[in-house]
Length: 242
Image (cartoon, rainbow, N blue to C red; front, side, top):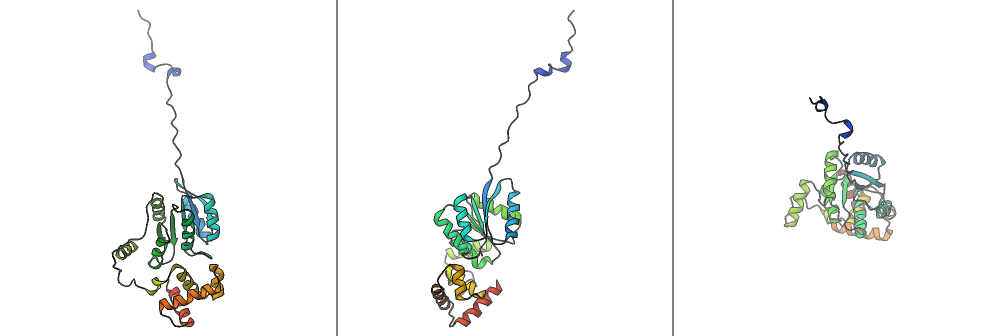
């Protein structure tokens, strides 16, 4: 008779079993973000939020436009997230400077300022989007990813304004004289509203006092303001409402 073989009860010997080969899961590529904001606490909050994402990372920070320009040209990030109001040159001027040298660089403006006056200016300068700082963290991450993949973002209200402008119809109440100002005149106007003298504005914007005076004259002409005192009062009132 055949000898009893219990192997069928226990399967083949352990050394004969094949172990499944380990499959390495590729690490997701993290897109590189550069932050520009003059408030350290804001940069820290944004950095922590972005670093917590599996597909995003912060590769640099700056508090003003000149430092940002130098660092960005060196590290070449995938996206720049910038505030609008910066010491010296504004976020709009920084956007123009960056795109003059890196025309394909996506730039997203994150600002506390009313988008009614600023979003279109930011887009005209070349930014891919404008988002208010009051937006939720989830919304910010959504917009960053959209811009990184070639999209753009403005609020539905601004989108409607842009469509109206494209077809030659402006929404009622949108024809503020302030919109007639160029970006540089708009900057000078803001500084006037913040109580800065011609010399202080010249130093902040790296212009000559004579150039600032030329901008003052053009602002008065476009806003139909007769003298410097009226311009100051008008600018202060405007800044206080923002």
